[in-house]
Length: 80
Image (tube, rainbow, N blue to C red; front, side):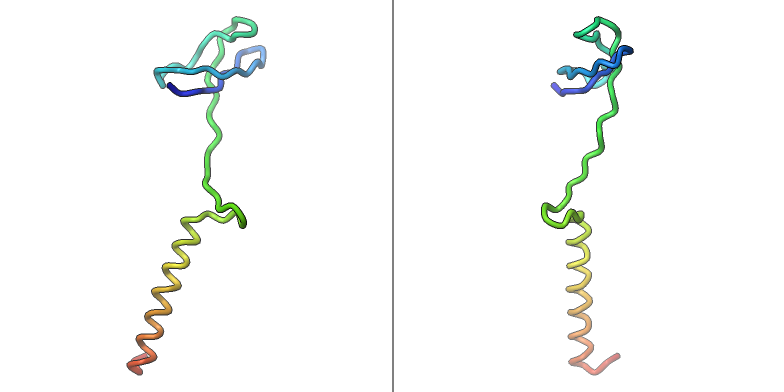
């Protein structure tokens, strides 16, 4: 079961447990009117301190390490 937010014509917002994801409307518990499911807010995982996306930071670290490794290799062999 999932929890979804629903909003009726009288602007009442309520949460409902729903077994089937295809249920787009329910009865409003406050006024009894038809309540329509709201779109959920998008979720993004941010790093706790800087607010950066961890996957982007990890990608930058990997690219930097591979570039540094390449530079060390070319410096030893003298090949440019």
